[in-house]
Image (spheres, rainbow, N blue to C red):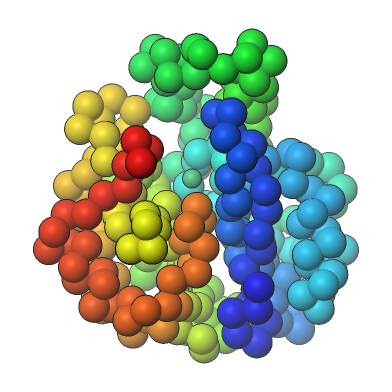
Length: 254
Ligand SMILES: [Zn+2]
């Protein structure tokens, strides 16, 4: 879906945890750079190519991948893309870099997680564990809070820890679009924060997540692209305030 000139929200079907969902990576480009923000999983590659062409650019021109975070549903597709073009630069925040590179073991793959997937068919379970263990790629360059990337008219990096320690949002200045990754989600049509996990042993920190959303209040936002919920453009700044005030979180249970 076109969000603004040279800014496209991709829509990719993805089956994870036995449930078919749509994920929404973002594509933006200018004369010199084509940037994909989050990549889905290996099976998404052909759809990405097709949608890039339909958007008016092409997969062959892809020059940068920015990962908003370390989670596999965001990064597992990177390896397959790099196998087609190893020149593509991979960027992420310093705090998630060691997990993306495999230097540190991801916290999500713990006994609680294994318990959650234990009722899935064995083939599905193996696929998920395989993605966790074999999706590592080198991060070529790290991004820091407040940094402005001079591509596509200016992209501001906002460090938004909570969902993961090195989670980032990106603000596309020209269109006032916030690429939120998993810092926010949409539940029953309402804007909410990330999934809250009070146990916090898988790395989610609800207090950090709320503090991160407070940082977003400094931006004039027309569109929010959430990775799992898609586009949200109903007075985003007001709705973000409400999410903070009411501590509205996403829940897998709904
Ligand atoms: Zn996610």
